[in-house]
Length: 160
Image (cartoon, rainbow, N blue to C red; front, top):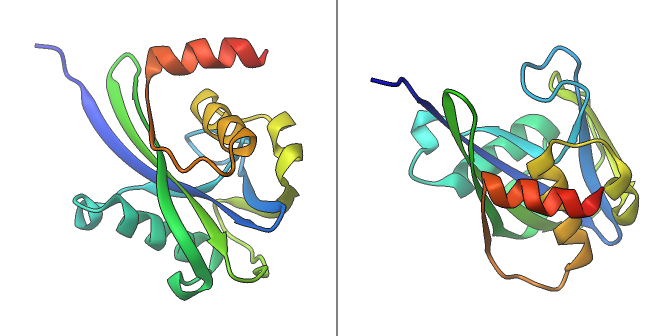
């Protein structure tokens, strides 16, 4: 019988006006070393029934930003990605901050305030590039979008 692992992740793009917090992942990271990403990480067993809880936890752990500083946080994207021996479930939220937060050091990578349009040119994982580009191009659209691995591959071909 084939052995398949499953993993779940929650992340977010947090913005204030025309800027977003992006992280340049550390070169020491197992997943996506040196790539740009939103804020997020693994969904822990204690958060398994609530991706939004995991997202708030990751935001606070990585940035120090508290839920009270976030005006809205909405689930916007979900992807199911399969590699040779793993299936990843990725929940991605978008949020608005009520003020521009000071960024702190994190052991995950370096946090940066980036102009929304500038981030499109940054090197990201394929699913992240799909989410980010779609979000920036459709900021006023609050529709929930689901992707399978094959969808991400097709969408990213149109970006190149």
